Image (cartoon, rainbow, N blue to C red; front, side, top):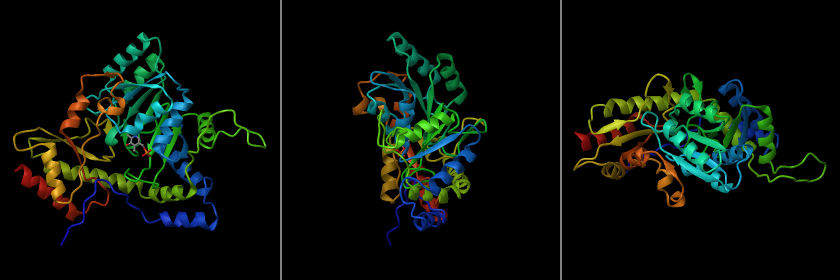
Length: 377
Ligand SMILES: *Cc1c(COP(=O)(O)O)cnc(C)c1O
């Protein structure tokens, strides 16, 4: 019998999604307006807490693009950006013909290194231009060093765009990711902790920013009774059907976070015995990760490496993935500046993401354990 493939992080429906979609059909709200969108935004606003104004858009990438537009990022501007991330974090900088300045990760959260951020800011100031934004990522669900980064943001008066695409439900000092940046984003792509099949939100601290986000994401129509456009807009609004899926997923969000954290405990139990593998975990009690993906670092030796382990998993129909390859090492971005020691390149070389889906069964955990045991012991 051929075993089913164990996937890294597949979608996991909660059961109510079709109910909300049916409601959209019943009221013929099939396009980019309707009660699902309004309710989805309201639910997220009350989940994230006060001072969170949520606009639902077509993707997390679109939300980052809009965030940079709201901050008036233009051609030739500097934008400081975490290098260790998915390419969607950085691409909107190039959409606007601005210049990314990449920054290394630190050891505890794998996110922006505060010292390297300051070096990058000083470099930009020397070039005669203060960066327009700092993009801080909470990668794999782990919050970045929020206090340190926000202090730098205040000191130099540079706004933070928080890319918490992977971090819905994660917390720093008991506050949710998505509430730290001057503007924050979360993604609902199919592989994230909950999904709208494809979608994202932009979270702002001010109602006026939400109004502007709505304006820009719906083609920037002027307030006239005919089609008048003074600014460049986008067709970035979330659809009412997608928002229906999102509402069904919000019903089970707490369960999903709980299960991801259980997956982490499972990996802890099997990996803690192994000297050559380190499971990436919360540094201290200030950090609360949704553990969107569980990641390991492997100390290479003559019979063991990330590549070999990946191969072994693959032979057993288990999907694993390499960590995000840092942006400053990507052909697309190789000509841009990078600040730091190169730590994020090192973890890319020795890391793997392990299956972390919320539908991961006990049977499947067994299959994973067997591969790890056979390789390690
Ligand atoms: C998924 C992701 C995005 C982009 O979100 P989409 O909804 O896929 O456009 C941005 N940043 C990070 C870190 C992501 O993981």
